[in-house]
Length: 356
Image 1 (spheres, rainbow, N blue to C red):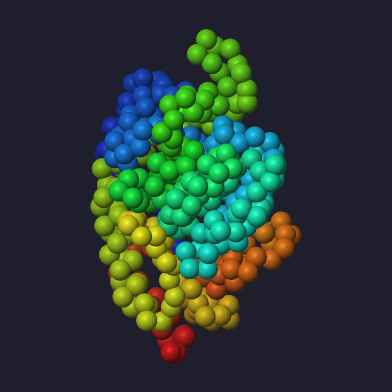
Image 2 (tube, helix red, strand yellow):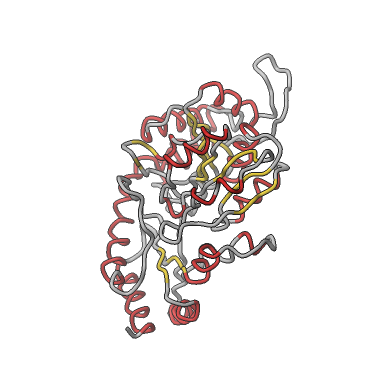
């Protein structure tokens, strides 16, 4: 069975060296030396001032909301994984869904202003499939209405825009380091901010709100990354560029064979890619279902990513572009160890199925 993602594992000997350090130190969690080392390496590699590692991408979202958003409503995208809206609800805020741009698949900033009111606590755009939102327009909205921007950048590891990491934008950006991601720590996530004071606040929140003098000042939670997860990240760290290059080869093979038959996401200008996903937009939902059926007969399993839209899950009114795209889009398998022959086989099946 060939799924959309397959976790990559590091060289066992390299991983064992980090595991040995854990056994030698007997330091398993609570901002251990491996977590600190990985934060420093990621900061240098990505070009981000403050990198704060946590237990998951979802906890990163929850902590970000607690750190910068007042009580109230958070405007977000309906075209995202459930964790985006769940984090809003879990922290006691209310998700308000706004439609996406039909070309970029990202939250359309031109539709946001009419949804902003005195209860708006934040805007939480999603960089869908790693494609950065309109950063300048969201920055303008943030300044105009004095509300924070929290970017869900779960798909964005290694992506640069405007000659810097996409993680450097917004009040806070968060990412996922889950096993299915380009770079992972088994489970895990990270928060990024250029604000040192905010970074200090976040570090207290992820550790029960404990202050430097040992007193507790909420809100707080336990969102710390442990040393074994950091060990996985450190062991994989030297392979990051290799992983991206392998994905690039597969992505390009898909694109070269399918570009004349499908519509694709419009990518943000002056932005790199990390090739984490290969989404194709079918002409109709029927066509999509036919392709999925044909691929699954050959044990190739694409994913309807994201379907259904979050507004429908919450029984909210339909949103034209997100609902339409959600019904017609799927992601094809792409991971570093995928055989190029599978890409050729999958595209042959797709082209035979659509018959155009």
